[in-house]
Amino acid sequence: MFNKLTVTVLTLFSWSFMSKTFAQRHKTENVIMVAMDGMRWQEIFGGVDSSIMHDKTFTKERRDMEKAFWVASTEERRKKLMPFFWNTIAKDGQLYGNRTLGNYVDVANPYKFTYPGFSETVTGNPDSAVNSNGLVKNKNINVLEVINQQKEYNGKVATFATSVLFPYVLNKWRNGLYVNADKDSLAFDSPQMQMLNKMEQLAAKPTGERPDLLTYFAAREYLISHKPRVLYVPMGETDAFAHQGLYDQYIGAVHAEDAMIADLWSLIQSMPQYKNKTTLIVTCDHGRGGKIKEQWTDHGVKIEDSGNIWMAVIGPDSSPLGEVTSQSQIYQGQIAATIAALLGVHYAPPQKVLPSIDSVLK
Ligand SMILES: [Zn+2]
Image (tube, rainbow, N blue to C red):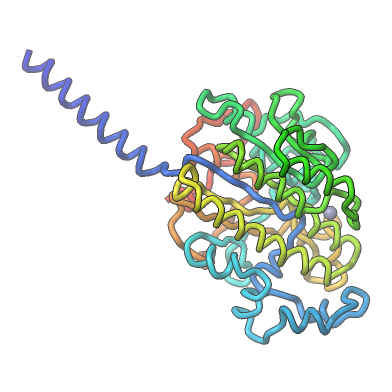
């Protein structure tokens, strides 16, 4: 009798201790991930690059850019370009990838372009067989579909993407994930969604794809009306304008996307389901050249430093490290396992998966 009672008490005690530990470690109930395609770490940590700004090949309207974004101090300059990153994430969250401090973020796949980069991010596997930007259904399992298979998350995982690649990267045919991309219209009946469909039909498309602003607003309206637990919003203009060699347009897209992310963060902090229970991750898929100035427009195997990237995180489980100054190395392939860990979901697909990022989880 005594032994049985002792065991019960001990069991109850350890159970309550374990649940408490678990609850303390995982305050995150929702994850939002935004991506800025091909956004360079150089501008994240250094603001506008003066050598590219002063080169007429790349910057037609130098004076406007100088007026809006130039100041001699690096700390002030990066803040002018990305005020949300430097006033909010750098204070309450974590910013990884300032290589001048020895803090490294890299792609682990050998290709340094879009599809392999996003595939690595969502599957956790830098699979060398994923080697093209073709419309090919991804064979690797991704963390979004595994989360969507859990009872409490089912139907609560959604993606709004600028690029037509995403239904393929996420293989929505295999797993039934909701993925709205590029020209897909929004099959929701509200006046807001109908207006977004109309705007998408009528908008100019200087990059050939849906403008990021409309991708963002589709995601925003969906968040308000459907309250997803996991929302993924990969945007594309930074990469597209850089390929066109238009530094002023690229910089304009960076500044606008920082403002959209700020708007999203303030929106979720105003909604009880999300406030203080949501981790926001901002990432990219690859970098671009930087060591040779002219290579800023491009990326890929021939541009070695285009595998150098960055990552930003803000949320209730991540301590406010700000700009991370420690010497460390992380890979974008670690993001999948990190998202699973934040939500307490077991992620062990058949393929190889890189481990979660410890410093995001404490
Ligand atoms: Zn590209």
